[in-house]
Length: 302
Ligand SMILES: O=P(O)(O)OC[C@@]1(O)O[C@H](CO)[C@@H](O)[C@@H]1O
Image 1: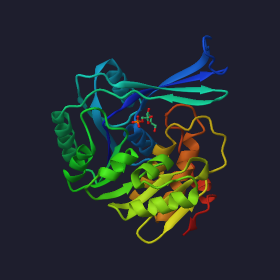
Image 2: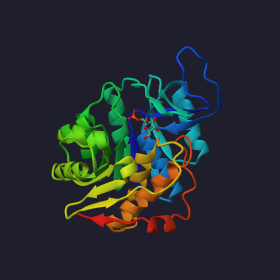
Image 3: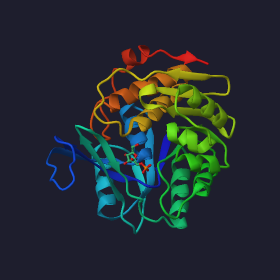
Image 4: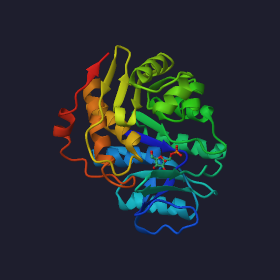
């Protein structure tokens, strides 16, 4: 089983605008949707759709926390969250003809006892893998992630900010940075595929057995103890990139549960991400019949 931990979950509010935003003018919207979100929760949503056993945990509070849990339950995502006094956040994505705008709130403060309750929850489920993903809300820090990673026999996967990655001290099976996070974690300039590979390889020797980096239109790379792999992005019509990194990670993790090779895992991640960017919001699209897409993705080794 794979357990996800989302310390800063959100209700994702996605609004489609037919005209660009203009200062002083009312923007009208025809379409909007609400999804249970936050990076770990997305991983559990996509893993569930991929048929991988998973439970989502973390903290939730207030009416948005209740809405989040109702959405997970309606989508048959196994969830076991710790209730907190604060209000779960609302994160907004505006999809307009001129681009994609994302507004993320900082989230409520988390007190140390809530982290210990998450540890108890994880021990109860006894997962093989724990995925800790998303921003750190007030009251938490890199030591919170190290605590969760070291609290049981599981392997731990992280998708957290670059500065946080640099401060982690426990051993991690995998991390999933993007361009900016690779740069922040290593202090290197990352502005093309080659510099991303160099940064991922450096990070790989620094406590992360594998580094899977999402590079947007440049696809994805995976630095392993033996070599680095690269897969280009699939050629699809992109509606909304929110959740693409979570989808990449889910595809990689799903393949790992089937003991697939690193190359197949990377192709599987890119194939899942290509489905997720084809729909708006962070809903899980149908992820059946991915084999052809996966096999059409070429992987090069460095
Ligand atoms: O503010 P964070 O925790 O870094 O990111 C949160 C978030 O933007 O990430 C997910 C997409 O990856 C969304 O579901 C969610 O709103």
